[in-house]
Image 1 (tube, rainbow, N blue to C red):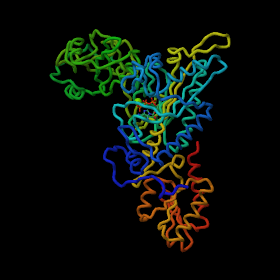
Image 2 (cartoon, rainbow, N blue to C red):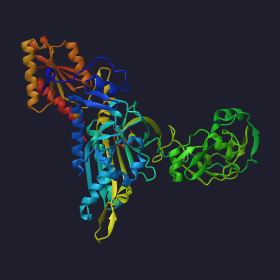
Image 3 (cartoon, rainbow, N blue to C red):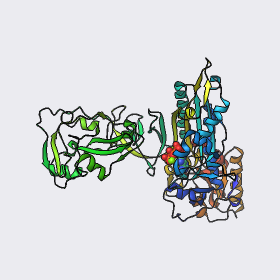
Image 4 (cartoon, rainbow, N blue to C red):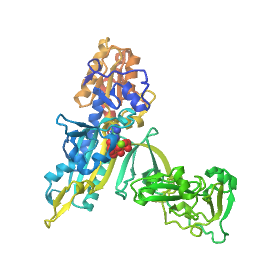
Length: 575
Ligand code: ATP
Ligand code: MG
């Protein structure tokens, strides 16, 4: 049992001015966290208890899924990062430094290199596979904009796991196990989450999921289907071709019309009095594989990540004014695919335009009666646009909705990217050397705790899910100077403590209002209050922090009732 008078949980009334999101504010106000430098914190005793609880759930589920815990160093020699090629590729987020002998090191932001080195030394045979290793360890990332407290820190704890398999099929199995463990983890923390498909860049396939805690303050936009379990990052969300290809066979030749000074979709469609959905927007990109024009309907936006993946390009970026003039012969706003002599790809939305309008590649002119497939033929029709709210679900045809989420976890099939580069090989049954197939799986410990607050708070403070609350029951003798009150409080606290309940005993000589406010602020799920009148009449009160429901219970039953409420809340956090 913890006694507040001997504890360090410095609560404050003031709202810290640099805290933009509620979880950051409440962690500071509840005395869980103190800043040392930008993105670098002291975890105060109660804050650390929360992190330890998150970690305990992580350990139990990782162990349950057959992963083995290891601990790798924070300080990593540059040689390993040079082997993977990331020493050069990673940029400024990687904090680099030298030791006294001028050897280069970094503080590990993630540990693919270190773990691959470990495994290539220890694993020789197919008999040792599959193998999944995990750790819970301090990471350092020199984020450009550390903010939101533990949500985006520079030094933070991460649970990172890495799987090694003999082949793709095995790797898919390891991935599935981790995916399932993640679902159990976030359910046990009582969180409302979605696993969404995430972009995998050049690795491709649907082999990456982000675990998103749904919260308005989330930095990520996600789409999810109202009818099935489909969810995706907005960057990744697939768009179906939404209607049949248009048939414009009966229209005449494209006609050139003057559109003086009209460049934007709004201006052109208003000026020509046409539906903006029939405008063929033409955007020029400079990419690692050369100039490419991308076409999309006037009511849609180009998704650069889809363009990049479609082209298999290293980079794509919108061409500047200069380049647009060189390639199209007109200022931007007047580009169009007819007669354009550059590689052209089109979004599906363009195919269903029966007859549209587009730039004439000449200043102050557009073309109308343009028929895709007749007047221009793109190299390919593909899904190149950004999803819109209300679009059909690519899995079931239901309706897609937007929401915001906090990425708390990430599972990723790495393939052989690291094992190939670093030669993590094994001998198969036939004695033939093969490269292991990897996966990596991360969960931010502090970010998850912060996300739990974003989802569980009210005007008075935090409302912890019991599985990650710093304490389970707060016992408050309203006035510790009254012997009967104090004795009754000590009894119920000791009783619960003996049953293994985590009790926080507020034995301070403070005004009742302050004690109640602090109990609400710190979000302890169950509160037992012992006041003078009630105790004299043989009663005490139990209050549910979440519902606010208060019960007046005979003193003899107080511990039993509180225990039952704790058990009920624990059951609500079942996997
Ligand atoms: P983000 O896009 O938010 O920067 P990321 O893609 O860089 O995240 P990963 O490299 O997949 O994140 O890291 C795994 C997990 O580590 C994340 O899901 C998140 O929970 C946590 N995490 C990543 N960066 C931070 C950070 N700066 N502070 C706290 N937790 C973090
Ligand atoms: Mg990041």
